Structure formats: C-alpha cells, structure tokens
Amino acid sequence: MPSKISHYLLSILCIGCLIFLISHYGVQLYQVSGRSMEPTCHSGSFLLVQKFGIPEQISRFDIITIRSEALDNRMILKRVIGLPGETVQIMDGAVYINGSPLYEPYFSDAPAITDPGNASAPIVLGNNEYFVLGDNRPESIDSRSDKIGLIPADSITGKVINLTSF
Image (cartoon, rainbow, N blue to C red; front, top):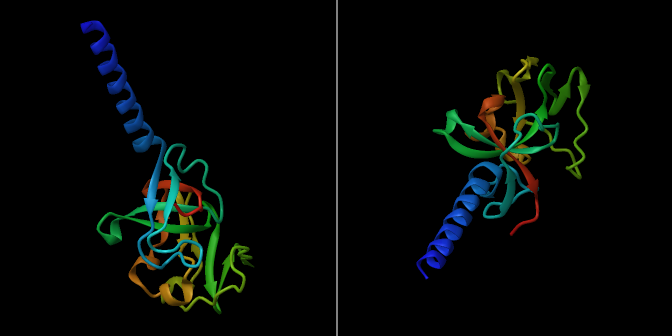
C-alpha cells in the first residue's frame, strides 16, 4: 500500500512540475491591460503567448510581450513594425521602412501617427533591435507606453500565438 501512495504522490509532483515548466517557459496566458493595442486587443482580454524560441521567430506585424525598463519593468504588448537592420521613419503620419511606406493590413483605415517628437528622424535598427508600436496610434502614440519605439531583442518575453479572447 505505501508504494501505491508514493506512486500517486510522485505522479502528482511530476504533473505539477510539468505544468510549471510549460507555463513558465512554454506558453502562458497574458491579460491585456490598457488601450494601446485597440482595436486588435481589448483591455481585459486574455491572449495565449509563446515564450520559447523568442526572438528567433519574430516577424513584422507579430504582436509581442515586452519587459519595459521605461515602465518599471512592466510587461506590455506591442506590434513589431521594424526588424533588425532596417531603417524606420515616421513622416506625415505614416511609417516608412527603408524609405517605402508600410502597408499595415490589420487596419481597415490606416491611422495617422501624430509626430512623436524626434522619432521622425530615420532610425537605423541594429542587429538585435526591433521597432514596435501600439495599434491605437492616434490616441496612444503620445502616451508614455507607446514611446517605446526602439527595443533590444532581449526585452522581448513572448509572442502572441492566439488572438481569440478567453
């Protein structure tokens, strides 16, 4: 009988460890807080975030989670606009990548971006840098959380893999 109980306890311990490892290093639920990603993601929604293989699997337009030093190491949600080695410029309310206007298919009407100060000068991204913005640009580009813009790859903590709200 004691061996049966120890077998069950060991099974429960293994399942608990597996759940911890998957949620800490594999995938995780993320709750959206704030309006910077509207209309794509609404405050209070839950998203499924992949935490492994980051940033090797990051592409333009991916929605990612970032640990922001500018915001006291809070986790924030942003969309990848510029990739390593590219030049990003914001001019006349539009985003330009390597001199060409960026087509953003996730907007029905592309929002004009209010000039965020010196960000209108061309920004050349290094090998481990990305340029990110929120989707609610007309209202949020002037907010503190959307002035992130240029981020190092090591601040990326995950990639949204499911936009279905839970």
